[in-house]
Image 1 (tube, rainbow, N blue to C red):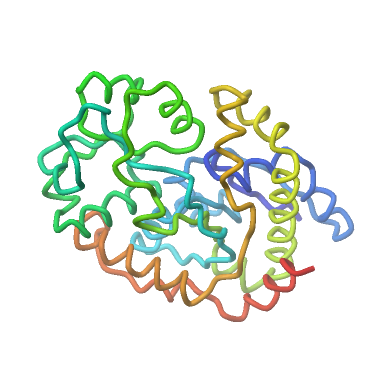
Image 2 (image 1 turned 135 degrees about the horizontal axis):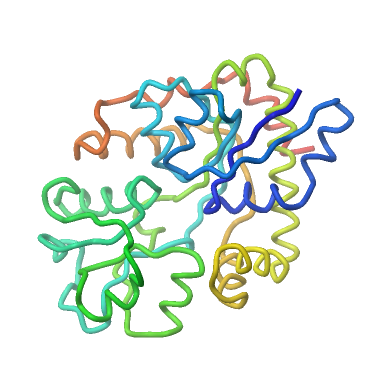
Length: 296
């Protein structure tokens, strides 16, 4: 049997695992193989639901959208919080001094990613609405240059792009991600796969942690892989990767509460078409196998 894993390039654990051969080695004694399929974060839920992939990983928002669309997914594991992963930037000379000052402005972000959760919660905390009080726009060209030129009000940046923008100057941090959300990577699969093949979920999870261990110990190599595939400099990628936790955890009550809060905020903003119960995507019977895989 071949397991098909969707690789979202912005998910560092999956991204590096797909290039290291670690999962292939772990699956060989089981007579299993793996196929890697590039997939966008916002497409991961649909790809799981229609059987294109068996396992995927994104940030916090895509599984919420998937669940709201009626897909029967199951969370398998999550990363530790990523406090240095992203930030909301404004121009250095901008009159915007607080999130409340964003009202009526244009905020560039990767709509549908964790950045939607981050932006919606930051606005809600300031008494504003993602739906009503800003114009959310997807990146179109050089967001840092647009910000410096005053063509946009704010920009949610992450990873090497965030490092580069700060290095080049002309921008100011309005909010760090850690001031608003925990910003975890999340991993999920279909319910039928989780229930029928928990041992494979455990093997994949253990391999993800081994990939994280490799990246943490080989930051220059990990940065070179990312820069070659995704652009940017090796130095900027190394700095961006160095702040990641490189540690996975089983699904916890705290994580489910975080996701429920996000789901409620996104439903209130009409980003999600309906309210959902995040705990419906939790399979408690899977937790012991995942915990053992991570502790092994």
